[in-house]
View 1 (spheres, rainbow, N blue to C red):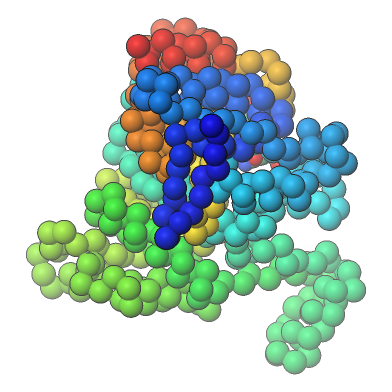
View 2 (view 1 turned 90 degrees about the vertical axis):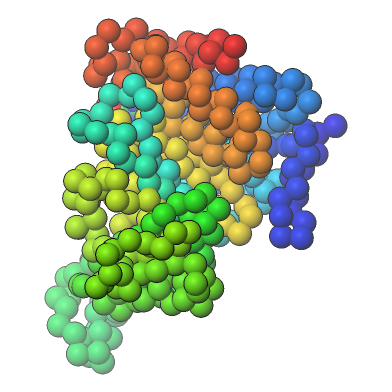
Length: 403
Ligand code: NAP
C-alpha cells in the first residue's frame, strides 16, 4: 500500500511504496517528465525486483494549474509537497507581467527550501567546450531565500522608490539620484549559517576534501563580506577539529592533514576563472543566491550545458528536485529536448530517499546511452557520429541499458 514519506527523530522514513508528488512542468516539461518517469520506474523495478515502487501523485503548478484553477501556484500544491516531504518538478514558465514572481523562486521561498544544491560533474561522452571536462567535479550550495532574490525592489519614479531614496539621502548621508531603481540585498547570519552547515555536513558525509566560500566581500563588505565571516564562524563553532583553513596552512608544506576538510574562500569573479583553469582544486562551494545562480550555469556549461545539469532545493527535510533549465517553449510537444537534467535530478532524489541502487542504475544507464552516442539534438549537434534520438527514445534506450 502506498504511504507517505515522513520525518521521525530527525530522519526521513521512506516506505517501500512512497507517494511522491510531481509537477509535470510547462513547455517541454511534459516530454522530459514522461521520459524521466519511465526511466525512474524501470530503475526502481530493476534494482529492487518489484519490492519497491513509487506511487506518483500529480500536483499542479504553472500553465496547467492556471487553466484548471485560475491560479499559477495553488496553495494545495505547496501543502501537498509539505505533506509528502519529497517532490520532483519539471521547468515552469515565469508569467511575464507586473507583480507575478517566478514560480520557482516562490516555491523555494514558501517552502523555505534554503539550499539550492547543484552537483556539476561530467558525464562520459558528453560534448564539452573545454579540454578536460572530467577535471570538474563540484557541488554548489547556493543560498535560496535571500540576497537580491528576496524581491524587495521598487520601480524608478514610484512613490516607494522616492520614499526610500528620500530616507537614504536625508537620513543616511547617501547621494542617490532620485530617478534610480532601488533593490535591497538582505543577507542574514542565520540563513548563511544553515547553508554552511548543510555544505559541511555534505562534505563530511561524502568524503569531500574542500569547502570554498565564494563571495564578493571585497566590494559588498556588510552583505557578502559578512557571509564569508559567518561561514567561518559556523565552522569554528560546530566543526572544530574537523577542518583547517588556508590561512592556517600558510608557512607549512600546504598539505591538509588526513581526514580534515580544507576551508578556503574566493572572490566571485576570480572563482569563475578558477573553475575553468584549476578545476581539480574545487569540491564543495558555498555561496549567496546571485553568485550561485551565475556560477552554477557557468559550471554546467563546462561539462556540456544545462541539458545535463541536475539540481535540488532542500530545506531541513523538505526537498524538491528539479530540472535546472527552463521550459524551452519553442520545442514544446516536439519530443525533442534532452531529459538528462531531470533524470540526474531524479538520481539525486533516489539518493536522498536512500535508494542508492536505483540511483546508480539510473545514472549508469544514462551514461551508457550517451556513450553509445544515442543522444537528443542538443548533444548530437556537437558529437561526431551521433544518432539523434527523440526524448522518449532516449528513455527507451536507457531502459534497455538497464539490462
Ligand atoms: P530555457 O527554457 O532554459 O531555454 C534556453 C535554451 O536552452 C533552449 O532554447 C535550448 O537551446 C536550451 N535548452 C533548455 N532546455 C533544454 C533541454 N532540456 N534540452 C536541450 N536544450 C535545452 O531558457 P529561457 O528560454 O530563457 O526560458 C524559457 C522559460 O523557462 C521562461 O518562462 C523562464 O522563466 C523559464 N525558466 C524556468 C526555470 C525553472 O523552472 N527552473 C529555469 C529557467 C527558466 P537551443 O535553442 O540552443 O537548442
